[in-house]
Image 1 (cartoon, rainbow, N blue to C red):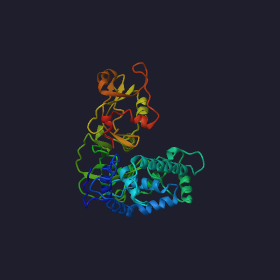
Image 2 (cartoon, one colour; image 1 turned 135 degrees about the horizontal axis):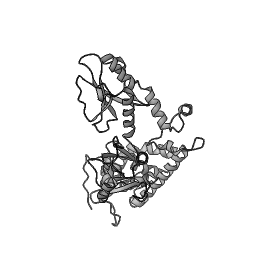
Image 3 (cartoon, helix red, strand yellow; image 1 turned 90 degrees about the vertical axis):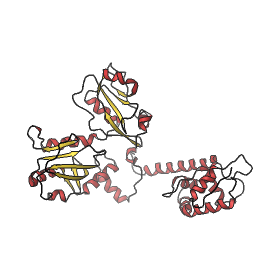
Image 4 (cartoon, rainbow, N blue to C red; image 1 turned 120 degrees about the vertical axis):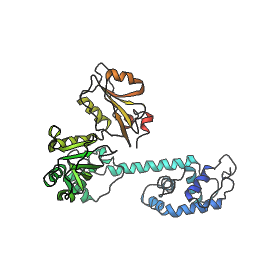
Length: 400
């Protein structure tokens, strides 16, 4: 097989193309049109990018030279470059640090180097995780990146941790507390007393509306923003802070997408305390895990929870099942379900009775059932990857 190498290609691209054309069944596995000198030149260019870092890893860790080369070249691609294939890494090891005699290393050999490197790194991470006194709560180490701090700082964090709070939760809370935030109650009161506001609501029509609260305030035209609001960089609801924007309107449209937190409109009035509680409950319900969903449905008397085998819009279609028509929508605020290493958007929630669900049984999949005679008992798996496997493939592909 022959290959054409374009001069403007990146070194990694060139190596990947050559590696993909290797033929170990031939007397000379290199593709036609490519010389060993060309391969060495490309590999030494790659060596300029990664070589010093590989040498540092070899000097400071238990990884061998070839294990370090394989792991770095396969895992740590520079921005804008593609990772090297196993065949391309075989070419690199063959050309760097050894005489170019014999054949490039096969994919099997390179894979063994990579697997050994991964195993050593996993053992090293496990060692670092267990450097503190027992017990060793694994959930403390679920974050995607490890945070290194000096021992005195770690001790201070430990003193600030609340019971059953992970280090990640503790850091998030401390960072939130450092923000100049105005409590929602103070926000409403400032607008009510300084600007005669008679309506305050949060618009929930936007995707991920909880990432930045868009507050609509009904006030007379003209006038300055209350000082406590202008000085704030975040809005505090319960114990959490949120970015926010304010839209002042003299005659706001009371849209269905508005979650009203304060209103002076006769029968439709909403007290500040009631509105704050309502918004806090909605924010808490935007993202729920599958166990949280089941716990919530149990508390309101649901019999089962099913999911459509096809997505609704860009997310899942949930079917909470009840013996009779529910009085309200128990999952009205749900928008996201965190799964194992991904997040599933919720496109629609359709509470149904048992009779209505049976008509949909062929286009849905049962996730949980109470087991009270109507359905055979079905519990959620304890293992997060097993719970993820319950989601239909077509729906799972909509996750991020």
